[in-house]
Length: 450
Image (cartoon, rainbow, N blue to C red; front, side, top):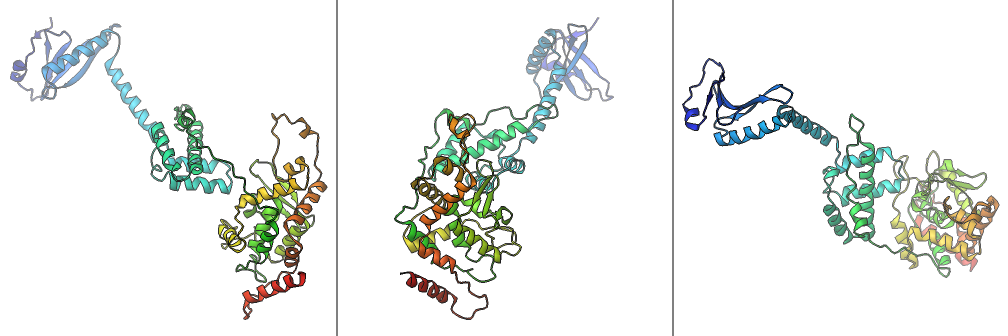
């Protein structure tokens, strides 16, 4: 017969400690299954049988930490669980295991900066995209860099988008698309040891779609007008930049770069990164690999551009890029100062993308066929478009060559053409006033034509 005691605080306080370490059990007569173990301490416990007959004992806590009333209440809760077939010992172990697993999974969730580094290392991105995304993480989200990507809330996203929109609506949209791309990539590529996705929540950027908060950006329509084009090309020819020297791989870089963009319709970064391996001077072609639509573009050069490239190649030496940068194995970047110089000397405002639009506009004004123009600017028709005719019309390379030469005649006046064909290269060790000599040379050509 098990001896039971009516456990009270007075009784418990009066019980002597067992210095020998022997356990003495005092089972409660009021709450069956509840009791006290006395050793060198006094500890509350419960003990009963599971429905399957398995005996279960579980410690509640020490007397003094728990009051008798608190311990008895906890005992009733645990005893009820056991009678329902729930093992509180196993349950607690599972909770600990789940917590440990959750902590381990949380360690696998990257910060925004780490997620972007992983994204950038595994995705094939253009240099322009990398430049824009670097700006996002190091500028727009500099205060979010160390935050785990799953900690971003919809409210944080909306507030950040609103904040960035005060600076630039277009850049605010870009920043959110960057965040969405990095988040979705992480969610689809990060798995635990059981091959389960670590990130199950949808991107918080989705709230911008739900709330229809995207900034509406008007498409730019700028281009250089026909009444401005000859003044613009002459301005390019007669603007001096350091580097117009003999045996210099950067000779006439700024002029040739601007002419390349307007005579081919290439995007800024496509021109900046053009490599000599993709320029065929024998057949007068240039190739753009992996452009925006991911379809390589092979273009014929017009006669004037072909001439400029042949001249550049004379000074290229071992440079990889057609327009080399100041550092070894680098190319030019961010030539806005060149654009601003031409605007200052001619009064004609333009962006680099305006040159691409100018190219397309001139082609259209010359009644060059729409399919030829599409080919020149590398706009393709997707498989689900309804333009069935597009699949039947093949634009020949000769058609493209004729179009390029026609466009050159509009862009480059006879005067600009003569200056280009008679460029003066200053000797690198010349002691004369190089800038004045250069300007006088061009002035003589201008006077001879006039």
